[in-house]
Image 1 (tube, helix red, strand yellow):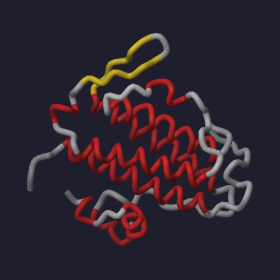
Image 2 (cartoon, one colour):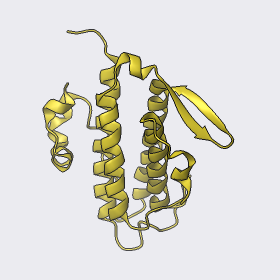
Image 3 (cartoon, helix red, strand yellow):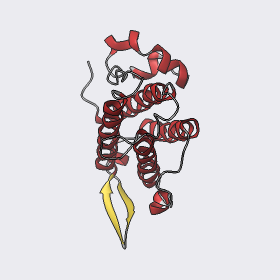
Image 4 (cartoon, one colour):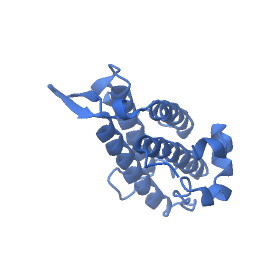
Length: 187
């Protein structure tokens, strides 16, 4: 058995993130007309608003991790997508970027300082701290969507079957959607 590898952990979190988003968006695609945008009790007032928030925050941080210049423009439109299909495609695109970033991560690049544009200042953080924050943010808001689904015609899906090998039998559909196989997850 090899030593603990924190870079592998970030890779696994990126895979988990993408797989969970596929499953959650698939569940949301089964909502009845009006349920996606219906007013609900949560931090954001609807499933639509919450999924849009996840997306815009992902744009913001993934761009910063990649050294891009999007910055606060990521938030120019609070809810850039009214329809789930376009939102799901954009979420899949940013998830692919996050996976690629984590697959290329090394111990040295994990400690690299990232510049994050804020109102009137630049926040400087280590890449590994930004990644931890981003994965926590995703999990937090996916949980809110999960809870909101309980008040719809769609049962909330299981969102924690993506990291350990024993759960392989539960994730075939998500792996197929991403064109991945088990070997990718077990590296």
